[in-house]
Image (cartoon, rainbow, N blue to C red; front, top):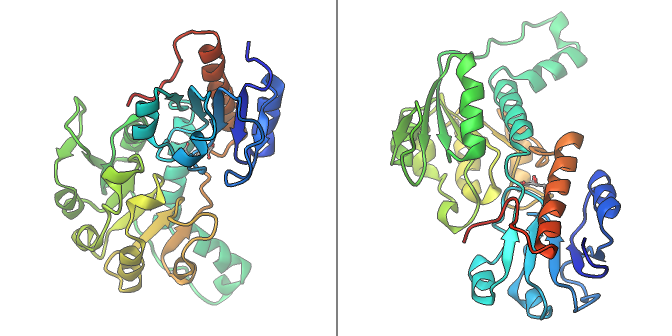
Length: 309
Ligand code: 8YV
């Protein structure tokens, strides 16, 4: 049982998620993280990855012992600070793998086969006078996955039936039936498609830069469903503008919900508003898993999905 007035909800939760929250607990709402603290006696925070939880906020909550993040990424949490203060945290891995992989494959095929351009081609009735240009097949391509965690591994298994050759880059080799590259540039050089599924944070900040994009080459494609922080956006914009790569599909950006305006004018780019996990079923499951962690905390039980740090 979660005690009344014990949980502070930091940030906006879309309706279907807020309904689940309200069904199971009665949080104190702090929709604007920079606003005034509504109640300093709370023991736990419920939030989402899009809301950085600053130490200065936590310093105003002397009884905080747990943070439940409703999302798989937790680069919004000050882990060193939490460790120092003995604050535990949870996220919601696993339940969003299907949704994120489905969107990734949708973006990939939409980008390679120019599906949005084909839609406009028909709407504008250009078809009556022109033939839509040939595109390129996914089958036979070399796919390099950056970050072989739960989502990366699920994506690799879903891509295999598409007759692609799969490689991966990450901090260490894993016992997987795919080629491992310790060097990201080397993998880019040996790939037709780079797909980013790695965590955000300092370790992956701007690892996709001009060197990687040049190695990927003019027939190469970049797909980002990880975090905007993983990509050096000016480098990517220049690479697409100069046709140093063939195109990019992006679901995440440095500045959400107002991405760099230069992205909006690029050809051969496919943009989505950070909807990787945004299905009704997935967001309900994520919200309930986040609350399961809160319940476990208040019942002095092990957390279902603790963050290790
Ligand atoms: C969240 C995300 O899923 O899970 C993540 O790491 O990137 C987000 O899509 C979403 O904000 C739900 O809280």
